[in-house]
Length: 380
Image: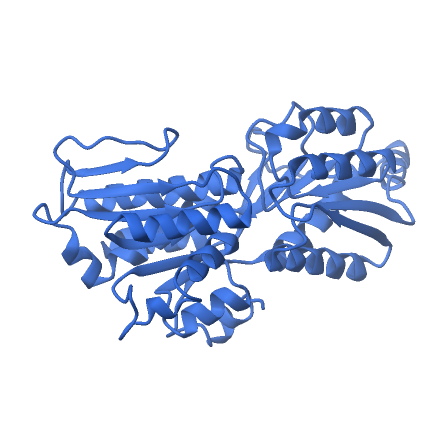
């Protein structure tokens, strides 16, 4: 188990670069003397750089704190470069897909040098991605990756490896002795994974990362007796009668009220041993369903034995972890996403090679959240 955890931490916490394409390994040679013609060509290449750059940044929610930190990071990079005009707009929340489509259409019409976008529904933006490509506007994705971007339409992506990050949450859950002891055939238990939807790439990846990692880890205790249910996209049958059911909890829509209702139904309808909330909206929904978290109080709460794990930071999430209503959470670095995304935009405009970037994610709980290396990414 320790070996598995160490490997998981290494995969999640390290920055990694993935080229957008493959190539043969370069041979080491002695560079020949630069000719006059080559110098002229180099000067022409350098002339691609502009006196000023204009970048449109399109977010998927004004309502989520995480998204605002993305913008802070992009603004910091723009200020550092000194010659970038950055304009930001976003839909009111991530359920407003058509609103974001309209915003992106407006952004393309302004003919910016580049577009930096966190898509509410990547598959809904195919026409806009093609239009941007055809007009020579590089598009860089941040936070949310595109699984099926039109060929040549996406320059690069800066995002968390969501499957690995959510898998880290499952590994940490398995370190809880009280949880592991409940995994018995005599008393089957339920572990829920609460998400606003199964459409947004990040949410889908986090559901997969958590449920599949937990599924594999629990095989050590209940071989062949673990199942995944709740949504056809994630279902995995058990070979034997299930001792553990890992259930994907997906509301009918991404509206806050529907997520809260799903959380309420989840804790009322099943003997849930643990729940993983894939984003800030899911965390808020669970807290709302448990009387602002007081029902999760470790000593006298109505659901004192329920092990809750979150994703991201923010004032609400941090407070729930500090009070121990939540066992802990996995935090991304939203500032780095915006910062690196903006810099990649400028590189793409200048014709430089750009690469996908995996942003870091770390585990925090009430015992380590004040440590400097953790506290610096736990935004309010």
